[in-house]
Amino acid sequence: MISRALARFVVQTLNDDIEKTMKTKFLAVLGAFSSLWLANFAAAAITCNISSSGFSATYGTTLPAAAAVEQASYTISCNRNLPSDPLTTTYTVFADNGLNVAAPNGNQGSSGANFLRYDVYRSNSCNLQWRSTAATRLPVTVGTITMTGLATTTVTENYWGCINANIKKPAGTYIDTVTMTPAYSAGVIGGTSTFPVTIVVPPTCTITTGSGALALTYNAFQSLATVATSSMGVTCSNTLPYTMAVSPAIGVLSGVQYALSLPAGNTGNGNERTHVITGTAPANQAGSCSVGPCTETQLTTVTISY
Image (tube, rainbow, N blue to C red; front, side, top):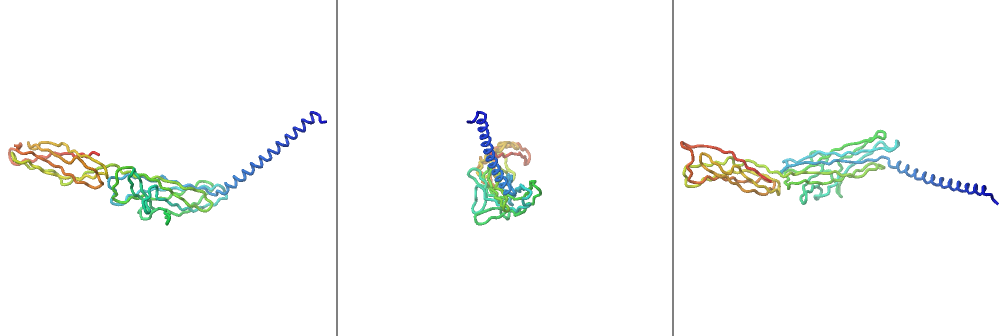
């Protein structure tokens, strides 16, 4: 027969043994997880990431006679995680054709239902595209990153966004997103990244002088009205409606009344349109010139509203 004290001791001993066994198993499991985590960390020798802020540009109604060029860059940042990791990695970066592919290999910014063609290039002369297709992949550059210690090491490479000359597009903000895909040495971890493209075509209209001053020649009490014209050029953004007005529309020169008129407006197409201003002096006016011919001038203003 076991006394109460001895029974209590036996039970306590059994509980202690069970607790020690559970702790031992828990520590063994924890040790296995730690070993696995360290093994995975050691396998991820170098980690790299790539980033770029992309590029943006603002252009007028008609783009320049030469291709428009915007410089941009991307940055690769790499870290060694262990002192035993390699000190170098090679890299190659490819770019895709964005969200609005223009066949066969081109990029487009979108503004509603309108598209504006552009491309990204490896050179500022816009003669070597940075792109990727199923058939060919052209890297912007192939380089090597050399690291020191465990500090972050970065490299920056330039690329250029180019737009062909004399593109006439409706006003709007044309946007796109391009994906960059880097390739590194074996054992390096690093994923893709994107950069934004923004091309702003503001609504604009410009006026150019055409045939010059409008000249009315009038003889006192003449039986027919005098009519004269002058022309001007108006260039407005494609699909942009505009109206025109002249001020003052009526006036008096040397005692002769006259009136000016011009078309109410039109819709721009990115090209220059010619508009005619007409001046009319009604018949049977005496005028105020008493001796010889008189010459007076009046400045007028043409306003384009859009």
